[in-house]
Image (cartoon, rainbow, N blue to C red):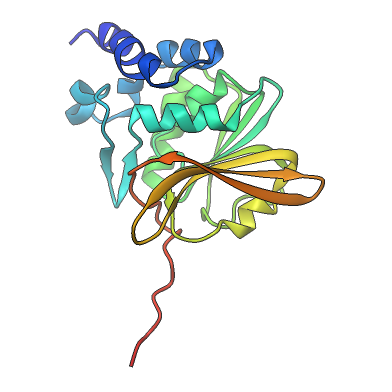
Length: 216
C-alpha cells in the first residue's frame, strides 16, 4: 500500500474540506506516518476517518475529530502540552511538530511502550512518554498551556483543569446521555470558562466515566 498517497488523500480529501485551516497542523499531519503507530493488522486502514480499536477499550481517534480538536486548542510553537491518554503516541507526534514540549501521559503499559519506541524511531525528541493514571494528570510537571484528552469524558476533568497555566486551554469531548460535544475550557486570570464547539462521536476515555450510583 502507498501510505504516502493515503496520507496525502487524508489531508486533501478528509481534513482540508472540514475546517483544517492551520498550515502548521497541515504540515505535521502530512509528515507524521500514522501507519507506523499501528499494529500491522490495522495499517491498511490507518487513514480512514474512523476510530481504530487498540484493545482494552482504547482507540486511535478518527482524523477529522482529532484535527478539529487540535485546531480548537490553538496550539502555539511555544506551548507546553499534556497529551492525556496518548495511546500509541500518534497524537503526541503531531503535537510534537507544533508545540515546544509534549508530556504524553498513558495508563496502559503496553501502549506507553509502543508510543515510546515509535517516537524514538521517528526521532521526535521533544515528546516524553510518562506512564500513570489519566484523570490525575501530572501536577508536578505543570502548569500546561494546552491539555488534550484523547477521548470523551462524562465528568468535568477537575484535576486537569487545576494544571492549566493562565491563558491555558483544555480540549476534550464532553459526554452525557444524549450528546457528545468537543469542548474547550480556558483559564483566564484564574477563572475557567467553557465553550462547546461541535458534535464529536468518539468513545469514552477509560477513567473518565461517571460513577454509577446504587439505586434501591
